[in-house]
Amino acid sequence: MALPLKSILSGRPLAVALAVSAALVWTTLSGDVMHGLDGLAAQVPYGRSVLASLSDVLVLVALAALAAGRSPLAILGLAGLSGPVRRPLLWAVIWIAPAVAICLIWARLAPDMKAADIAWLSIGGPFAEELVYRGLAVGVLMRVCGWRGPAACLWPALFFGLVHVWQGSDPGTIAGVVAITALGGLLFGWLFIRWNFNLWPPVLLHVGLNLLWQVFNLGDNAIGGWVGNAERIVAVMAAIAATLWLAPRPTNTPGED
Image (cartoon, rainbow, N blue to C red; front, side):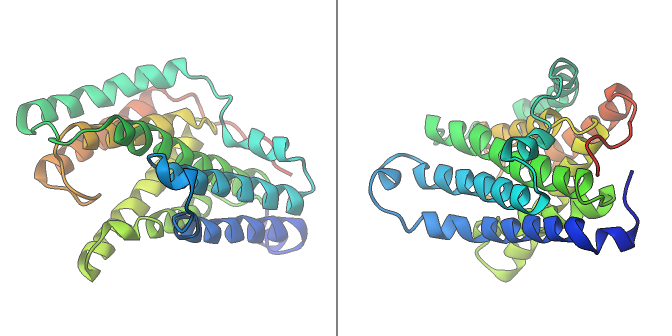
């Protein structure tokens, strides 16, 4: 159960929340820092992005562990990686089927698909983002700091939106991209909590949407065109409905202090 506000704003819960926030700030800077690197990282496709994401995980785990007085493995254990996968896979089939149907009927295949793009932009990147912004950030804020679900989802989602600023080329596009990705972060956070802190549902939805965006020509950024937005709306609505049907009953928040 969530802690009273007085407890959240004092002592160790506050220190841990500040540590998580500092790590989230780092996620907005790590891309620029790592993309300034040369050498092998610059030669491997998305090598610098992989290093940036790895640093995001390590910084968040290290700072949260230090502030909470727990081991890094204990912090990582809050991220939901050990959650069951079978039911989330069934859930994923329910929402991805109509989304794929929309793309097959109205969209064209992307003309410049590359294996490296699929591997990182559709799979590795979304997994890393869910681990950082949902599994670790939301998990620690709720299960160690005692935050309630809406606040614990909103705070990381704001940073999740900010790290996608690069997708915009003008103020209007930037605002749209940040808003859409932040709202997506709220949805992924809700899925993480609603599935009893199981990271696989938000990972599957994030990977599925990005994969469709890479395979089909749905737009150059998160805003997309009408087909991409129709696909996204259908997938999200089906994912929410299937979650309410298939997700296990919510339980008391595990691992809280």
